[in-house]
Image 1 (tube, helix red, strand yellow):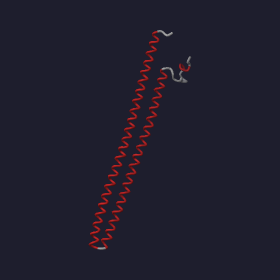
Image 2: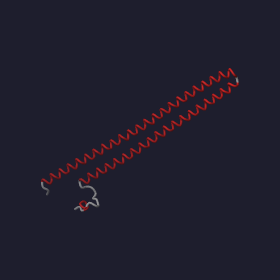
Image 3: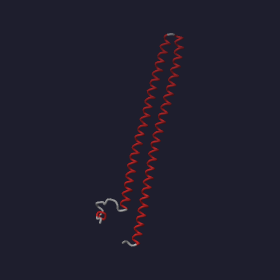
Image 4: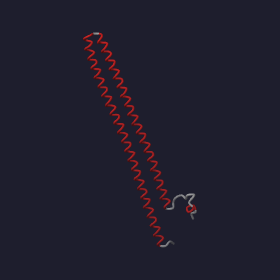
Length: 172
């Protein structure tokens, strides 16, 4: 039978082990929350960047469309005046101006489409990067939790004996 002093020391050791285990679990929870917050911030930042790029692309496309439309309308008006004044020569010039305006509109439309595609790809890449961060974070948290659980088990003598530990391999 253990003496009162031995029982007291055993109780103290148990209390310290429980306190250390609680501290480790608290640190693990804190690290998990911090990683989740960082991953969420990265995701939010990526989404904001993609949204801003999309909005800017749309703005530029509308501006280019309006400008091209105004240019075409102006060219058409000038061509009509010229046609009325000079006949077929003006008509040819008007047609050339109209064709040029149409080509400019097409080029603007293609550029806007390219910019929109780039914004989508950028957003997708950011989304994939965020997913990788979340996966690594989860693996790190899982590893930390396993380490903490092993430490608690070893503290209470419930862990698996290690091959190179002569004290634990010779259990009674």
